[in-house]
Every structure is written in structure tokens, then in C-alpha cells.
Image (cartoon, rainbow, N blue to C red; front, side, top):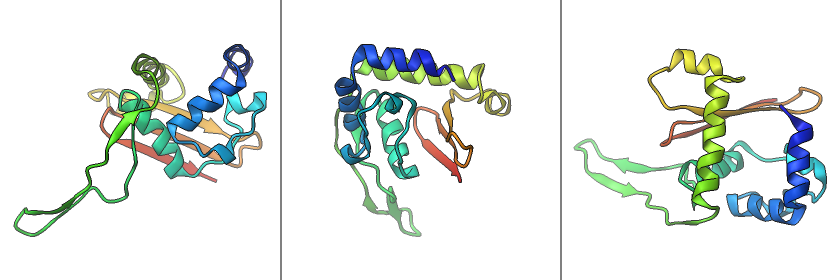
Length: 153
């Protein structure tokens, strides 16, 4: 990771602007500490909260509330229940696309390149993360349709 340029960019954009974007992506306001280290992800999120944030990015910047249950189908194939969450614009579509593109490069050439070697046919994007004491490790993978969040800690 390039921490110094990331913090510089964050400071140029401004802490209030970045905080607002994180909130629109689904991060709880109480989790965001308005200090420069926030640009490096220095807040505690559950895997579900992380998935919500990246779902918004992969959905062209439209946020739809995640659900644990997509549908219920009986033995005959009849849909008994289907979750149809409403979506609303959370972040600019171009910004979401650029972020997803950068994540695709992370899979093609960066820390997630092993994933690309195993699934070369898929348009995968991903982001890794670790805590300072390497107690926690994260990976978020997206393919344009599904979001997978993995946390070890």
C-alpha cells in the first residue's frame, strides 16, 4: 500500500468530504474518527459492513441494503419470497467505476494476482487489508454481481 500518497490525497479532499463519502457508502458515522489515519481505514467494521460498502461501489455507486436472504424457492421451483431492495445513488457513478477499476488492477497485478491466475475467465476486483499488528487480515472480492468479504483475526 502507498500510505503517504493516500493520506495526502485524503487531506487534499478534506476530512469532512471523505467522512461523508464513507457514510454514503454505508459506514456508521459513529465508527468514523475524523483524523488523517481514517484515510487508511483505521476504524472497526464488521464483514457485513465492509460488504455493504463494496456492494455500493460494484453497483455503479447505488446503495441497496444488503440482506442475508435473497429468495425462498419451494421444491417445484416456485418463488415463495424474494428480496427486492431499493437502491439510491450514494456516490458518483464515475467515482465508483474508477475505484472498481483500481481494485481490478489489484487482482491483475497486485496482492490479489493469485486469484486472477485461478479465475482468469472472470472480471474480478479485490482489496486486501491488514491491521498494524497483523492481527487482522481482510480481503474483499467482487465480480460485478457478487461481493465476498473474508476476515481472519
